[in-house]
Image 1 (cartoon, one colour):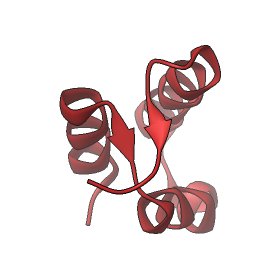
Image 2 (cartoon, rainbow, N blue to C red; image 1 turned 30 degrees about the vertical axis):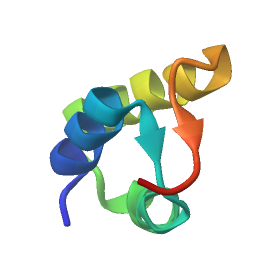
Image 3 (cartoon, helix red, strand yellow; image 1 turned 180 degrees about the vertical axis):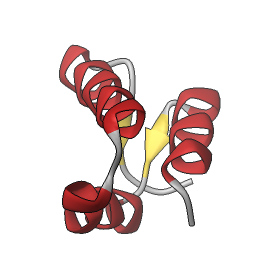
Length: 56
């Protein structure tokens, strides 16, 4: 699983799973600068309600 894959799936389906969130949270310390920006964008989309947490 990669952050880019998670991001694309979340944006496409407008849903992110709990497992994907766990992956993002558990690996943040290993992300490079670009991945951190992608994580921030994902967080923003979730906060705005554009992406829901649930199952696909």
